[in-house]
Length: 242
Image (cartoon, rainbow, N blue to C red; front, side, top):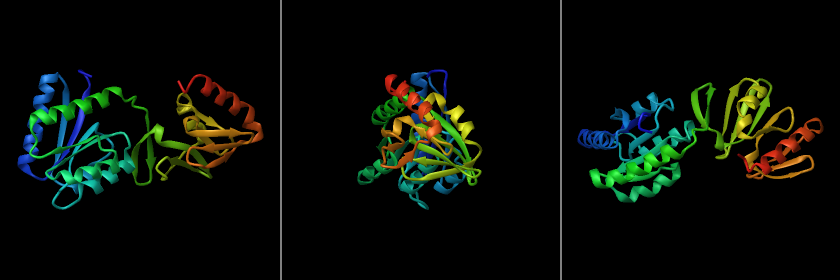
């Protein structure tokens, strides 16, 4: 990771806390020989408008004067399931809200280097271990970085490609199912009929011409696709998804 540029955003409306956070990050990067690209924002609105899934790590103040850090994090998660979020707060009671948006940790302000160092170690470990398996999806309201593991299945309706996600939401883009079949082949996305591309890792059960996904959704296998699908799924099971 030493030569990798790590893009970090700090969203903090207190000039003193912002300056302290930047100084601690610079001290850590210097000690570890890391290359940090740090951008700062003094309001949640300016950050949300600027956000295009371009960061590896976000430090987000919960108690922003004009907006709520939790709400901003929820909005981020709709666009980007992979980015690492750490909350900064001067009230420990808010820390439990971090679980709602899969925050890696929370840091109590004013930040001290000893405790912040340990939290940054956790962040760097997460960055080192993730497999960066994501795709960029262009929708009407912008471009999103989508974690491949969050996709249950992909459906085509007319000229729309619909990504059905594990959190119950949908993302709509344009294109062809064949394009995504090729792009996601190495991630065990299997074609079961002319309309669906299924994430094999999200299959609970296959029974004749029916697929049950982990969320209970049933998808049919067409007769023309059945042989190829069954062979591909057997291959997935034998290889353990590798």
